[in-house]
Length: 452
Image 1 (cartoon, rainbow, N blue to C red):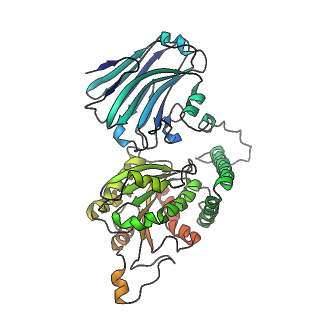
Image 2 (cartoon, helix red, strand yellow):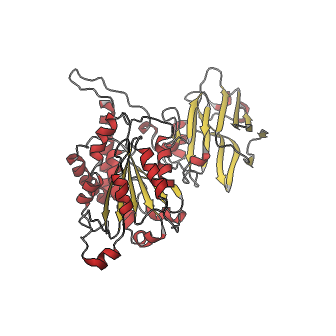
Image 3 (cartoon, one colour):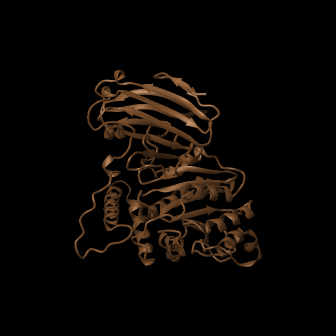
């Protein structure tokens, strides 16, 4: 049953279906309003620029928020990361003011019908160019609030209010007219040039604020050049084991520093210069994105929200990763490079084998990394074992080796190496290992039509 809401009214949303539709009807006569959704954290700041869903960015990274056009948004609240706790729906004008609004309504529904309705009109406002219409927020359960608050300033000011980057960075850049000799490519030379310029700007910023990150980026670049991946673009994810046996590695800061090394690679691969963080123990978790603006103590902050768990299952997080990047998308433009870090064996081997097998038909590459003493030494940080007792004390990464060598896959989509101590191996060697088989997988995935 639909509940009519008055301005400022809040209520729990009970018995919600998995898929929600939010429709905004808004009439301004000859004026046209732009409708947006801001995915905010608990402090009401934009959790990540990618959770600003508007005309130039019609969906969030995992597709939990989608703008379907004509004022319609589709929502899957269960797929949102825990960093996104509020969805604010807004309208903005380039010209005129909200007082010229003739009629407006926001309607929230699921498969069973209408759940909430909020109606508003121009007499509620003055000369504001923006309107915060309503929000859906999580506080023990998902709730709805009819906001109806005018805002002085347009979309840019609203974005700044929520802590987002300058709108110009998200707006399309005019494509320069190519010279007669300029080569063309499917990805677009102007887009590649824009990405390179953004990387240059980022490097200058990091030189001032985080010179150690610049050093890592330079080392990643060397490995990328050796592998022919200097201009390669991909999504980058990092899966981290949060089973109890990882305690000392987290406490020592080694996982934070390893994540920073993966982030340095991500700044070369990912257009957003970020890596998506996933966690696995007994359960699977999506823990947001690590980027050059928030990487300091990122892992420590994550563990405050996700305590270590008493088991190690691989399959749930692998399914989460696949849904995050590929759910319903079929062939994709950008491949996904996923570094999967663990210090122990999986308790769900059959399910994990199925995930690797099924994902071999998707544009994803699994780089498995075992951390700890190993019977199979692959990095200089893992010395060869000698004698019976050393062998007995070593970790058994036999299952990860099995995943690396699995037969029957559509395409070999995994690699494995192990290191006893991620800080004992030189950074340059680590990057070479991280890219070991990935460079060869990319053209094969393209030839098999898994990526553009």
